[in-house]
Image (cartoon, rainbow, N blue to C red; front, side, top):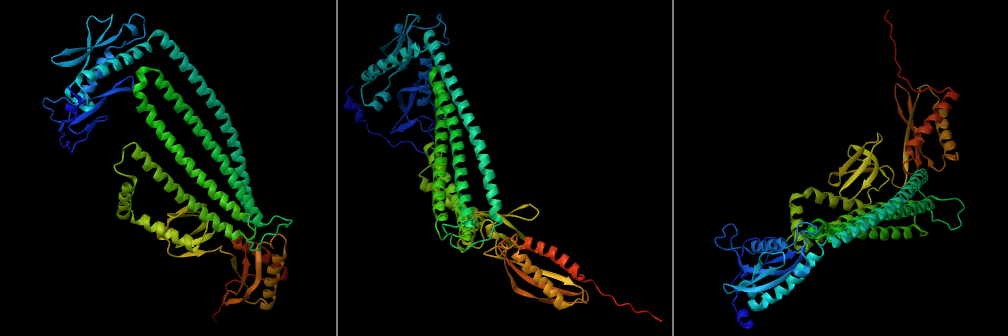
Length: 544
């Protein structure tokens, strides 16, 4: 048949509203499916398109025909590796004969009682390739003969022994590499533990230091809080780098086993068909997961480097570093969500598990979120406003509604507080209306003490003033106390006694420990002067 006569057949409108089976493709009025041998695609065969696979009638779907051809090829190969059942590759030939006007491909061999049918070249096949049936049969003859002989060669006993030797070499190499990487993992784990301890000690030291607003001098002899914060950020970067190395170590182990498994699956012809389903697709997912995680961590390093450069500037204060630390954690949280979301969408699209483009899917997700997750939107908006207005930071002590505690975690969706009992309280940002910050810039100890009504008021006031000033000059406490002269006086008189009130200005979060120490010192000073704490007064009236 002339080639141009076949090509000029007019295509019809392809059937619609039906889902094609896996591997089947539609080309005009034809459907094609691959013919595979040992996991390798030899060629594609064609058949008229099926509009309704639930009601085939006399039609044979192309995937059924491809399965029949693959079954014919498998029956030509031995089921075992023994010499008795192995077919010599040189004895196998593929021939073409015309049956009922169609070219038919047969397999001939010394061990075959009669030629075995492989497949028939149809008009649909010729139409798909745009050549005559005879030419297509000749092409398939050469391809089938070559691939069948290769399949027989790798099934010979000597080939099996060589394959097994390769298998054990790959297995030993994989196990040895994993053991070496396991040792590296443990060494890095000890290093990570040591850095975590150093960071904990440095953080504990920083919490006892005042919030300095002075510019750091280059020749300053004693470590300042700003220098301590710079060292803390350095420890943070080193810890993150060690964690990155451990993360990379884990992925090297994972890729070692994944690549080794894929190679082993490709060694044996019986498992090659399973290689893509069991190894290739998971390996692609593994690579995608690794790339996404790598991008995420590289961005983290970039952000940390920028923060380190800010920390080394001469005008950076502890308060600024605390704010930058909060903003950094929020940025990293938002960045991680975006990176992983985009990565997952790209992987799903590559696997053809999502229709359309990523942009179209993102639009659909945005609509779903806007209708079904309105609280989440409010959380994000309110969290952004809290960050923008600098209402509180990580490390601040705040009161939100009826809940109070130390801000441990803050991102655009939630705020987590650790209360004095050690309980972790999680609040959605959308519920935050009013915030009391006890540790912004400075704090105050609003101290009250009640003495007996008959106490010399001037003496009591002098004792309170002197005790507070002495404590402020104590080397152990002067770094915590900023001012003791803001307010002092008698606040209240009652039948129980006099309430003396004093304000002591402190560095952030130190007002409670300062108040406890001041109570201890006042108790001793009052005892020395014979001043009694206020007690309720009662008047007894005796009836005659």
